[in-house]
Length: 367
Ligand code: SF4
Image (cartoon, rainbow, N blue to C red):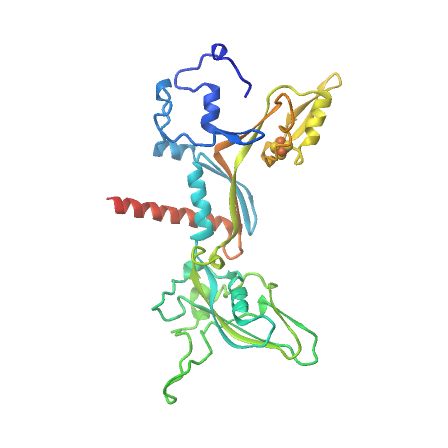
């Protein structure tokens, strides 16, 4: 903002803040060295002396909150979250990464592994393969539970590379779902006892209505698990269970979830001719453009402020500031990149429900 003497400041209507205070309240200003006005004004009486009510009520929050979806694909969603505090936007980000449950391989029963990858590394690789399974259809498996059709998905991997054959690439599509549960028998202390497997399914999962039309499996078929040389083989059973990213990153449903504040690029004065062309050239992401103002004159305009990456090239090394870079404190450009198991729009609604449950718990504890 250009500096103005206090005596020259225009009158401010009642109930409104002067422009420079409004900018401090609602914007982060990014100077060449560091940002300023980064703290939010949370205190309801922060501007009471000027007759401005800074409180947030549930009604005003609901009225001002807006979600605008900008881009939605199978695995990614970009949307604008408007009228929300950074703490809440960050809560959604953290819940998305660490608290929305998914299914992932947790236990691997290794029968044979003569590949170059050691057992524990192979088990870790299997854990990171996104599974095509809706976690809402499963229960958590606790330490004392028996693995059953409601809390466990069993996969089998049995591959070998024959002697004299070329090297074999083992991919995720070779993990076969066992709807009836484990096929491996447990060792029994009494040889005459009825053999037991590592799961206790009362019925086959493919006979359950929720899985009849949507078989369980891996989300991506071409993830490389291992490479087998001639004579090498892998035989194992992998048991997937429900979990959250807070326990292990393999259960995180997102590749990433992040946000940035909406950029605002303000021209502090009219920039014409050669200066305008220089400014346009400085920006690596084409935020500025040239507009013809007639009579062969050209001026710089802000054409695409959303693309600004805050590289600060346009404000660096200038004697007199021409551009001010701001960020809106209550407008977030949010991006969710799903790991593949759950669509991004479902992930966000799940995160909202989790935050709601947390708030309910706090209210319940307090009362
Ligand atoms: S900060 Fe960088 S990206 Fe943003 S307008 Fe200036 S030059 Fe362009």
